[in-house]
Length: 379
Image (cartoon, rainbow, N blue to C red):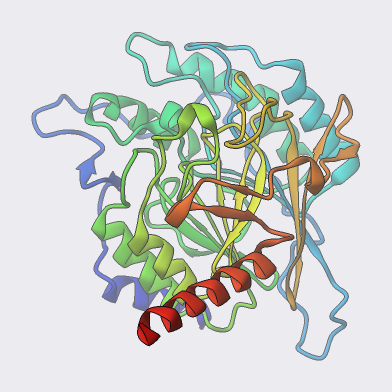
C-alpha cells in the first residue's frame, strides 16, 4: 500500500516519462539514429544476474521489535581509470574482496563513474564487461544487492554523449538489484526503493547546475509520501556544494534541491565526483562525499593532502542513521579519523561543516547572526 501511495504522489508531481532525462535533454536527441536497446545486456548476463538479497535485507519487523536491529549500506564511487580503460586497480579488487568477505553489508550503492567513458570512439561494451567482471558479478555471487546512479563518465546528461546513456540503460536493465522498488519507471537513472526502515532515492545528476524541473517534481512527489520512513537517503553523482580544490566549479549548486531535501527531512545526500571523502552537514542535512577507488584522489578545500581511497559504511536502524565511517588501507581495515579532516570546507553560504562539529558551529553562527541583527536594530 505504501508503494502505491508513493507512486501516486510521484505521478501527481508531474513526471511520467518514456525516456530518462537530465537537464531536460532526452537520451536520444531529435534526428539522431536510434540505438537498439532490446534484448539481454550481453550474452553472459545470467552469470551476474541479481542474486537473492541478503537475508538481513528483509522488510522491517513489527513496530514493537527490538530497536537494536541495524542495517549497513556500503558506498563506493568513482572506480574508473583512464579513458576507455578495461582494467581496474588493485584498490577496487581489494575493496570488492573486503565487501564480500569481511564487511558483508546489506546493500552497496554507488553514486557513479563506474566506467571511463565521456569520450568518442571508446568500446563501451568492453568497458562494461570489465566492470561487471570486477564488481557486479562478485557482489551478485555474495547475495549483496548493488544499486547505482549514473556518473558523468557512465551516462553524461550532455547531448553529445546520449549513446553512452543508451548503453548505460542497456547494461543495467537486466541487472536490477534485489530490493523492494517504490518507483522504477526510470531505472537505472532516477528511481526509489526501500530496504528495512529506509527509503533510498537515486538521482540522475551528472551535469553541473540545478536538477531539471521534471526530476525535482518527481523527487518531491516521492518525498511527500515518505513520512513513515524513519531513514531517507538520496544519492547522485554531483555534490550539492564543492569539497575538492580541483573541482571547485563542479557541483549542483541547487538551492531548490537542498531546500527540498531539508524540508522533507532527508537524512543523507551521498555524492561522488570530487574524489575526496568528507562527512559533512548543513542545516541538519547530512552530506556524505565519497572518496574514489579508481584514479585521481583529490585534495579537500582547506587541506593539504590527497584524500585516501576508501569505502564508506552507513549504519542505520529504526531510530535513524546511527554512524557514518570510511575505511581505508590495503585491507580497508582502518577507519578514517574525523580529526584528520578539516572542520569545514568552503566559505560563506556554501560552507559545509564536518558532521561531528556541525551542530555546535551552526548554533554559534545563529547566535552571532542574531547578535548582529540586534545591534543593527538598536542603531
